[in-house]
Amino acid sequence: MIVQPASGPLAGSIRTSPDKSITHRLLFFAAMNRGRTIIGNPSLAADCASTLGLLRSAGYGFQSEPGRIICDGSPSPRDAWSGRFDCGNSGTTARLAAGFLTGERGRFLLDGDESLRRRPMERVAGPLRLMGAEIATAGGSLPLTIDAAPPLAGPLPGTMLDVSSAQVHAALVIAAIRSALPVAIRRVAPMRDHTLRIARLFGLEIGTEEVAGCAVDTLESFEMRRDIDFTIPGDLSSAAFIIAAAMLVPGSRVRIERVGLNPTRIALLGCLQEMGGNLSWTVDDAAREPVGSIDVSYSPGLAGIALGGDDASVDIPGMIDELPLLALIGSQAEGITTVRGAAELRLKESDRISATAAMLRGLGIRIDELADGFSVAGPQRVAGGVADHHGDHRLCMTAAVAALVADGPVTIPSPGVAAVSYPGFWDDLRAIGAPAGEETA
Ligand code: S3P
Image (cartoon, rainbow, N blue to C red; front, side):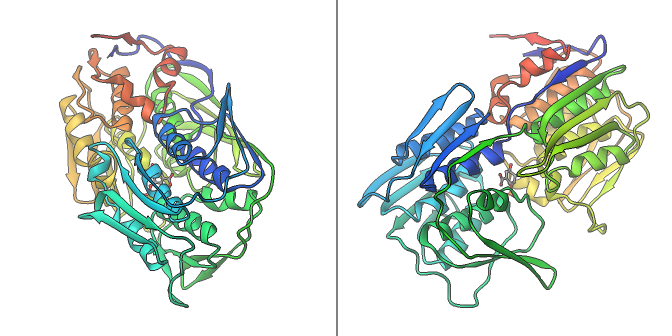
């Protein structure tokens, strides 16, 4: 894909792709629900297809119709069977499935692509073992083997299951539901709260109390028999690329509709406003998952920002997936943009600290890699060239935004990787007038 520098403003009103995190969770909850679940506007991203494929091959019936997926009452766990599942590139699939499969009876193997095989799995295997699961990793990574004979026995009374990742939290909640275990899970870091919202939507009772500065969730009921009809909002992590493009291309004005505005996911928006970004958002419906619209326009004179480090008030997990894009935005802002306290970035689909720095350097941007973040001074010119996104979907889309403000065309190899999270990305970019188009062989 060759993306040309923008020759005019970007404009229009769009709905970006449906939320990936919420879709994964709804699929797992639909599989556990004994009522009918209708998932409207599901994400068709490759990552969510990995979850859907895994659940189907585990025997759960999901009907795909245009714009929705329907699941009718979960079957009882089958007698001893064995399965090998490919989670593709999806960390969420692998971690949530590890929790889910503890409720099946048999021997299961979870594997994934080369990138997923490099990602840490002890973080989910460890606490599941404490709950009584028999799980082995290959030196801390995939393939992961689960010998399941439900129900789980549960941790020793009073043992806290400490988690700092939303994926691990979801895995433990799912495992607890499947074994009807009244566990207490301590969130030792802030994280997205989709699992709790969805569990409550399905009628489960989860008590949350604050203990010594940490939220502790206690599962108190396990039966799910409701008919649920839930429409997934747009993914803010996808919308972020459109927001950045509109902020950086002169004269642009774009509206993003029906996008998820869950408070645990919108840290980027506040940070862009602080940098001087012209954007505003309104929540139209806050009943289940907050959803609303964002108006964004060209934002000249952006100022650099310092995030993380000593300032513990900054919600780094609330924008973890948007930080590679923020590195690019920082390179276009006046002064220094620094991100600290984001070492988790090194454990994503790529090492997103070094891969972002390497890709941006390849486009002529000077950026310093830090152990737990990066520092970039701006404004800098972006050179045309080839963007080496390391096969990482979020870096691929960051490169497309960089191209719009570059001095010359940017060639993006394997543009299809954007579909790991945002299948309509290239169409949406074109829809607002971005010159992304020449596909090369
Ligand atoms: C996700 C949580 C985040 C995020 C990932 C999706 C989720 O990871 O980076 O893209 O759906 O729970 P953590 O597990 O590190 O919180």
